[in-house]
Length: 312
Image (cartoon, rainbow, N blue to C red):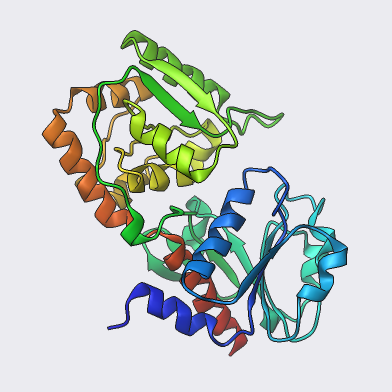
């Protein structure tokens, strides 16, 4: 049976190269996803290039290529510089319908994250991966940026800080996490733990800070929790060697037997802190077995598998 990396390399071999279009030098949270696509491909020896949203780089895309791109804000703001060419397969996340209409449907895959809506698709590939053959849409969560063999050993410490790597935000539709983070801070404060938010750090520092933390929660905003959006923070933190826990209920289906299931963030924090060191480490080890199936090797393989179906 082929190993996951061999599967990915075989699927990618039908294309001349993979072009990750956009966000090479722009700091946006989605940049880390593009970076993970690119670095995973390079580690496996798959020909790949990564560009900015720059029309002067249009010549990079050639016939026979596979293009991965996203319009981060979903408003066609940056993605309009994406050149549409013949005999190029496009996998697009959050682009407007305008550009989709310019691409032959046999050369276009829509990529979306897993939410409850994904389960309306006609094909279920695993617990959180679905493919809608009618709309040519693949639904899957983002994963960890580490390869399986790069996972760190489970860690436990008694430090008094909890690092949060990422955004604390909100918008006019209340889709952010500002209220839930406030709840997390209150829960940590009751336990004399300091909440320390950090943004835009390199991968090595992200790993170091998460491993240094007393806890590594993956608390999501209300909209995300209600729609079962699965933040990649959960997968990353576990692969970095920390215990993953979240207020998103769908994680209970994914991490059967090794998930903390509590109704509130405060209760999640309490339960994690009550675990003995051996139990804490054992739970991480079980979670890591599951996350090994959610690296960017698998995410890219799913993308190429869906593209193969569409191209038939």
